[in-house]
Structure formats: structure tokens, C-alpha cells
Image (cartoon, rainbow, N blue to C red):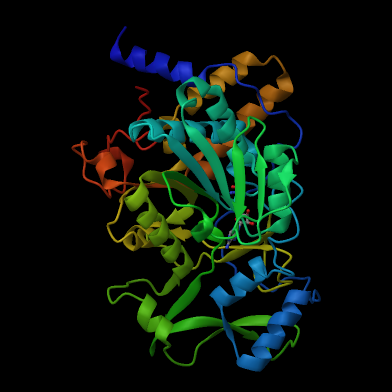
Length: 452
Ligand code: SAH
């Protein structure tokens, strides 16, 4: 057998088994996902919508003055009482946007294989904590756990646990249903940061936390899919007088509406966040993402493991990406706050800088390249062969197109990984490479998957 054929047969062994297919039904391929566009400027027609959050924010602005975009985003998305993420399910066809794991089971399966591959490459540690940040409906972790179950003969001596970082009571309820069938423990130790726990369908313990700091240290494999884009950003505009932060104020012409304004003078934030060599005229900075990436980098440096971050984003070259979605349509970000999603592209170059060299980084690599390297074509063929149902065939093909088509999610979404330096030490490649083409590092996804 040639080397290539041997590699293919190993891939087929991993990807080709007749794993259960997710049932058709709620995984309908919807028409839209969160796209690139601009938020400011357009006045929406439904300006009469005075939501409780709008009232709360107006009260705040009246008492202490205009607020930053970061404060606006934090309040609108995660205010415990009325925040957008807190009390409803916004994912899927009937929600506001759709994500890759909801589109096709293949996505989560390939990510599951990535974790097993990295776990093997780091010497098969005896414990494996899978830590997902912002798990949505729990679909991605569910697909990953199905792969772990399927590869039980490899993982049977490994002590696996799942740790979910989720602020939303509603979404954690849905995650519990997806992952445990609803079997959760309610009587918890009040001194523990675990706010819910349960056992997966295959017997793996699952724990829920509010914050990453609450997750126990130990060899951990982190996952953040469409999570960083939800973290609050500060916005800055270059003016003739220098950099000014963009703030949100009450519109004097329409007292029930908000508007963007510029801070009258430079603030500590402008001094601190804008680099001297900055060439753009408009910049978005997400300090929360910087802090989080530092925490992940410290943990991986100390305990090993890896982090896989997938999101739409750029390498420090985009400007105004802050936008809002409702019912799969663009929405004015300042209208009816709390009823629509707010998001901004992730600046991967900022994330890379904020690791402060503690770990090696790979990517950002386009989703279509990552999934191709992970063997999406083989997996698609196997699923098509295993089903004679034409509706299932259509669903699989549509899902593949949505994930891979460069005009859809294929080029917009990127994969970015944090790995311990020693993971790449034997490779003759330099770390921190930005583009896969120059990289043949033995890290699945960022190079071809080789199953040893
Ligand atoms: N990863 C999922 C869901 C993406 S939506 C998917 O791809 O389908 C963003 C997720 O992050 C939601 O689960 C939301 O409740 C959660 N989230 C948003 N801000 C958060 C924060 N500050 N801390 C923890 N979870 C957060």
C-alpha cells in the first residue's frame, strides 16, 4: 500500500464507521448565518420598541453619561435579568442565527477527531477535561462525545470529564437536555462554583460554571466556537484631533432612541488600546478576549492540553464589524436592545499578541481548509453511503455546502489553536505561522490528518 493509501485507509477507519446519524428534523439548513456588514447609520422601522433594557440603559446614561460600546454589549447580551442570551434560545431556523454545529453533524465529529488526535499527540494523558466556552445548545459537545464513545477502545483508560462555561440559564437548561437527557443534579454544594452537574448519555460527568476561572486546573482541551465574537468590544475612531472612543448616548432628537457619539477628548482607553503604529481609521478592541486568551495560555503552559477557537474574524486589518442580527436579518444594533444578537469579528492578531508567547499559536485558517484537512470529504461520502433516505442526502449535501462554500461559511470562519510549545518542538516548523500553506506541522486540521 502506498503511503497515501495507508493514510487514507486510516482516515477511513476513523471517519468511515457507521456512527449513528443525527436525526433529521430540527437540524434544518437555514437560509442565513451571521454575515459581514455594518451596523451604524440605518434607522430601523421598528423604532417604537422601548424594551426594558433600553429603559435601563437610558437611566444609566442619564445618571452617568454616555456609555462605551463594550458596556452596551455586555448589558445587552448578558444582563442577568433581560440580557439577550439569558432567557431564550436564539439558535437555529426559528431563532436569530445559525452556527456550524447546528448545520451538520460532520462539523462536531471532525472537531471530536481533532481533540482525540491532539490528546494522542500529547502522549495520551490519563485525564482529559473537555472545556467548552459558550456551548449554545450543547450540540457540538454532544457530537464530540459521540466520537469519543465511538473511539472508546482508544480512550477507555482515560478519565474524561466535560466542563461547560455558560452564563445563560436558558441555554444551560437546553444543554443539559441535549447532553444528559435532562438528568441533572440540583442539590449542589453552595461553596462550589459548579452551578449544575449531570452525566452524559455515555456516563461522562458534566459540570457547568459561570467563568473559566471556576474550571479546575488539569490537562484540558478547550473549545470556543462562536464565543469570542460575543465578547464586548471597545470602538475607536481616528479624528483630526487624535483617537476618540465611540460611545453610546441618548439621541436628543428622539428621546426613545440611542445613537453613536464620539468622546469629546482622549480617554485612558484610547491611550491604552491604540497602538502607535496603527494605520486604520477605525479600530475595535476586545479586552475581555485578551484576558481570556491570557488565562487559556497560562493554563495550557502549566497543564498541557490545547485550545481550538473557531469564529469569524480577521488578522488585525478590519475596521467597523460591530453588527446585530434578528431573525437571520441584519438589525440596527441600537434598536430594541435585548431582542437581537450583537457581534463583532474576532481580531486573531490581537489574540496571538495576548498569549505573550506562553504558547504556540496556529492559524487563523479558513474553515474550508481546516475541515478539508480533517477529512470532511471522506466523512460526507460515508454518511451518504450509509443512508438511502433522499431527505438525509439533501440535508448532508446542503450542510456540506454551507460549511465549505467560500461564499458561505467556508472563507468567513477561521480556526485558531493554542498549543504548548513542546507540542511543536520536534517539528522543524516555526510556531506562530499564520497561514497553513507554509505549514506542515503535525497538528491535525492545520495540516493533513495523520492517524498514528
Ligand atoms: N458555541 C455555540 C453557541 C454560540 S452563541 C454554537 O456554536 O452553536 C454564544 C454562546 O456563548 C451562548 O451559549 C451564550 O450564552 C454564551 N455566552 C455569551 N457570552 C458569554 C459569557 N460572557 N460567558 C459565558 N458564556 C457566554
